[in-house]
Length: 223
Image (cartoon, rainbow, N blue to C red):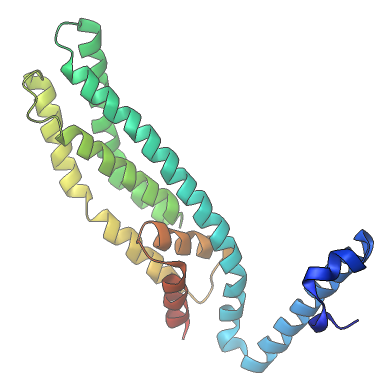
């Protein structure tokens, strides 16, 4: 049986389950054999390029996971927005005002720790986690800034928002740093498949690039 001539549409009609499993294994073995042949042809210099092909599949899975996380993060941030706007508009409830102050404290805490946490994630080569931390801080800053002209906020709350805004101004450049670290890892000659998939998916989701653009960047970095 020649694998190259298999008709995928009719394979489930002509063969049993066990035969299909055997065919699947033969296809996998044939792929590995051809990869080894290609490795021997191009030499060690471009070996990591071939191995990067395996990372493409990991990247797609990782990118999907990041997109789902970003969607979840947007939902959570939307709830935070609603809480901030609701709490700032309630004038007479002491407990509501206290809750809003706690929200402010937590927001400032997130913004205070974002740079440190981003650098920690980058040192661990967890680029996606650094991007998530940055996105959360960005959203918190935007939510707080929308309340700076609210007359119902007391002086303490206004000062907290101003402090948070300053912290955000000190943090904004981390996005460029995260993306640059991702691009630098693409040039690494000793790449880990999981980390490479992490870097590629971060460039797709966080850097607003298509998968095709990121793969071209990967090839350019390796050549």
